Image (spheres, rainbow, N blue to C red):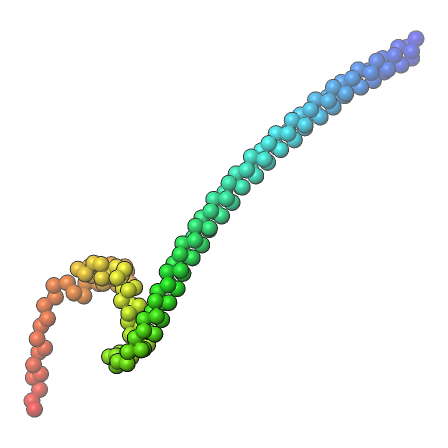
Length: 152
């Protein structure tokens, strides 16, 4: 009887262990499915954020390209205008003070210098290497040079 009781106890233990193992396996599997679906949602959210950032960077680059294109168009128009002025002035044979190449350069540089910061603020000191006023022109009286005491 003792062996049959032992065998029955082992069989009952195996059945209970199998049931417990089955339940644990199902709960682990459902947790991993939840984790996989949760990580999939996080992945989609991360991809959406990256896509928005990419679109913002692309829009900024496009705006920069458009502004540079507008600058290029204005420069080309200025160049074309200077060529037509040179062509019309070449019909009139006159001697220029600076020469034909220097005149075009000076004409274009005068247009560019209108936007110069130094010209916009004439009372500001020139900047030195420390990006502050150099102090060169600040209230220093010019003294007459001392006479040389050596005999002639």
